[in-house]
Amino acid sequence: YEEILRLDSQSSRAWLNRGVSLHCRGRFDDAVASYNRALKLEPRDWRGWFNKGLSLHFLRQYQGAIECYDSALELNPQNARVWTNKGASLQCQGQFENAIGCYDRALQADPRAIAAWHNRADSLTSLHRFEEALASRHRALRLEPMAGRGWLTNSKTPIARGQGMLNSLARSL
Image 1 (cartoon, rainbow, N blue to C red):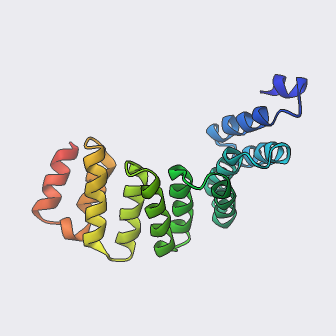
Image 2: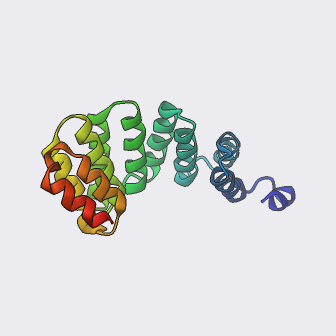
Image 3: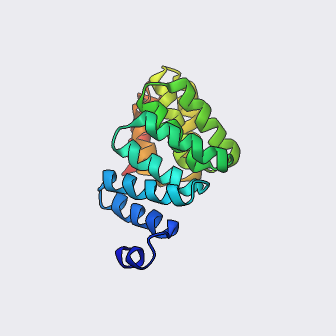
């Protein structure tokens, strides 16, 4: 991307892709700087806001991430990935009810959004709403039955303890 940017420093797509590359290498601050350049050139590109939010989340700057996700949702309000990631940032701040609302919006947009089902279950568990959490976890597992994360976390839900826990762990092996 450096060569492309040397030839055309006004390419928002190149700045965006550079940011993705930096993010993938764990250089989140540098990724945010690239996304800022991309967004300065193309402020209505929801992907720039989404990716910047993701890097800010990895930097544990959850409020900044939420603001970026809000900007992305203004441009693309039915994107399940954006709603799921906004929920994850809210969840990291302990705002479990708001996070669940975001996961519900993600699932309205895409009922097969497995991460939204898992994260929803995690937030419900944090609120001690174990039966609802277990129902969400089961929904995720029906969509992706070989997902080890789902079986392992399913076994940690208090309502699933006992024989249910043994069955869940056996399936994950």
